[in-house]
Length: 344
Image (cartoon, rainbow, N blue to C red; front, side, top):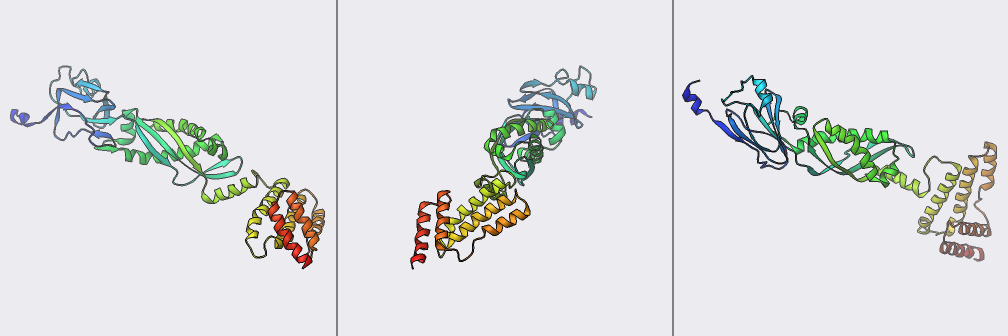
């Protein structure tokens, strides 16, 4: 190379990254035909790490501070390029800067419900949402596993990959934890701690540190939530035992009273129906603990004929009042209607 062409070459005396654009986690210093001046200065600010890469291989890593670039401060790169200790000429090498600032307020959520086993409900599909924060803790690992040799790598690009990692880890973590859904919903901190431990290990494989992870909501898909609400209202948590069947029948009967009051005929027309409903619940409850023949006999005995005397209906309404299945106001209304039929 002639002296004239050497003079025309452009040398870099100071390498630094000002982070003009927010959300960039990795940035390659624009080298092009430039060469780094031997003895030049590398400025690494707080919350940054600089990495020298030679032909795709990570060489030297620098933390915050001002570093004079010589063969003494670039031991790995000097070894890779076979420079002697008196090397004085400019050199070329890719230099990448990485931001180690904590990326706060990042949102996560389950785009699709996660199916897990549950000791109360056998299988449930849950949805969850929350916030997390992270940072680059190992620039070399982050470079080799995620960012690579591109000019810059943004936070959005990183989080596209983290989203899949988060969902897969969460499904495995919650499935292995065997924590019932009701406990998750009641104690979201417990759920967050369980997931954070496993998620931290997954993040570490990519040179990332999980700083915070919290759960703001846990829910079921709408149709499952509706079924759970009905089940909770009836005081049920498992299969339909005879006791739970009776309780569920009482719940359904009580739920039907306000609706019947709005219909033509009012509660009076419901007298026999209510009695039939309670009797049916008793039949079902007894049928689960008796023989088929006995159950059939009880069913026949519990049937209320359509021409049942008004006095009998009043007695059954009084029974419902005593059991707390209807209010006093409901009883008085129905009683008045039935008495009108009785005395004309």
